[in-house]
Length: 114
Length: 116
Image 1 (cartoon, rainbow over the protein chains, first blue to last red):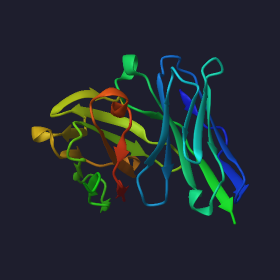
Image 2: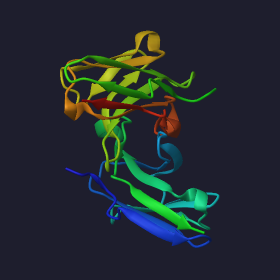
Image 3: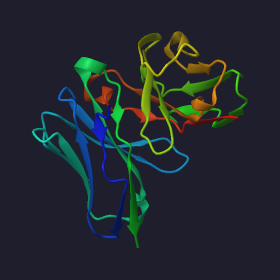
Image 4: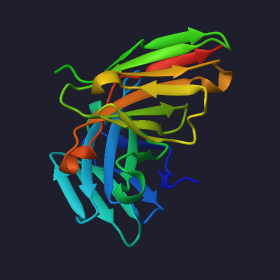
């Protein structure tokens, strides 16, 4: 039962262009969403988050959009840089059901070409 | 503050042996989580501590797995009688306990376990 899905295993983008990573979820109890970036041989690094009471959160080049009715969120990276090449994980938390544990998607490999 | 640390980084063991991993959290974080990640998948929740109390365990955590967090500081995860299916990356994450910061978990580099 995959409650968080990242349907694109990989994405390739030219340097300077926009990267859009997508994530869908099925559990309507999720109330907080996060994006993590992971380089090989390292643990996931927290990138940006959004509460379910908002539809957008921006931090520098990174913006996360949340569409609750569609149970969909996306991460926009503008402009994309070669150092952004990594695996990106979407994660969700449902305080009422699960405490603060995170449910992760399978990840999307982003390659930014220079 | 040097972040979350985990030891060892790599462990190779033979099937049937016991292994123990250690996680040292960010000092002011009172919540500590263990996750397991296999190839091509995202991390999966195993267990969670608030200070020294173990508050939740996943169904993934069989009786061969045990975790402790004495005195609410470092934590250990022990796997007894290892099986080849236990081969994975074991990740520790910590967070502070208040407000939205409670959701934002900071991960260590992980311990990669290979069971031969």
